Image 1 (cartoon, one colour):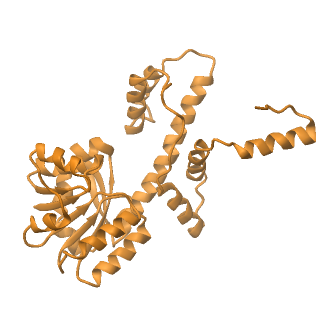
Image 2 (cartoon, one colour):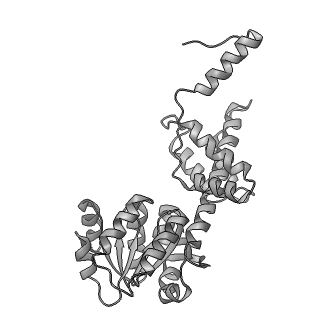
Image 3 (spheres, one colour):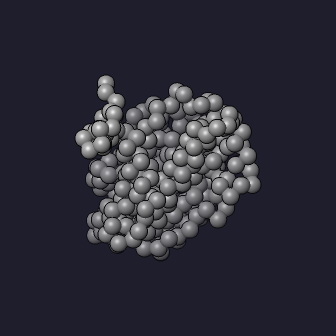
Length: 298
């Protein structure tokens, strides 16, 4: 199968290699040429314009975007519309908000272009050796290229989720769950760090990564981190929120679904970026006023 891949970030780059290893012909494009030059050294054809990408493919074009969500996707679609023809397939493999996906699907459907949303998980290693893919779209369209999804996914790691937008919806919830799991792991190690025992965190993570109920990819990532740094001294405790957690919490509010763990995990990420600690200042000030409690001054 011929695939035009747009976006050679960490995920896109490794997906390109994964596709190639499974016998698919990949033509790759990236806005900055350095990544394109790198992928060419891997034996993959690189091009330096979207027009060249389109012209390098034959017959029905299949274009796969691996770019940041939001405005970047809309801008890319607008650029591609100068080339795309009725019957072509456009895939969004990034973390787009499902309502944006539905809007884009309707826009493209009106002009005969098929749109597939692919929630992609598994990290960089998964992208390279076998990803987890949650796919949404019209069934007859997805069926045309389902063998591609099967090839580049880990065993049992690909499934058709349903109608357009469902792939990104499932991925949104997946990432929200990830927020809660990561927060729990982080808090657990914080308690170990504050506790009365001198523990080797690498050793703890190693044991927890083998046979425990909480073993898995996230715990292996913790193990890898402590293998590199005993106390993570060089890492600043700021955790960015890329959007999916917020979308999930907003969706839960809309549907009146209780998600206290995921919501608190999202708020914890927001708090990690707070350098002013204004709420804490207000609480400290109140305690001083009503109870005469001491405050810590700069």
